[in-house]
Image (cartoon, rainbow, N blue to C red; front, side, top):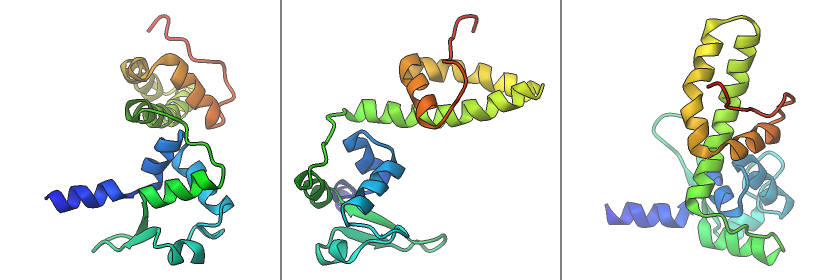
Length: 157
């Protein structure tokens, strides 16, 4: 069991590495492309292969994916001038949760605008989760995923 924990401490997903840099998995993937570690199609580049910076994982079911060497990837990006935002693991987790909530909120809002009771029910179920991640963080997440409406205000909920 200890070996698996060591493996997962060394090899991380784009989401996990992105959290360390204070960005989403998509933005982190784009950083890897900008700095030559990934090709345009998302596959690891020759530079990443030569540096043994990634590990291809092929599950028994589902499609293969990549884990990235945490230390090597971080050190390389920092050496390229990418700022590593000092975001605590707790804050990073809240940011990820806020983005997920924001996507659900947009879906619920659409249903509510169409007059669906389900939309209203979904919105009312999200209130406690929004409070947990913080209203300001939630509103920032909404903006970051392209929400065009007004900021959310929890008064009356």
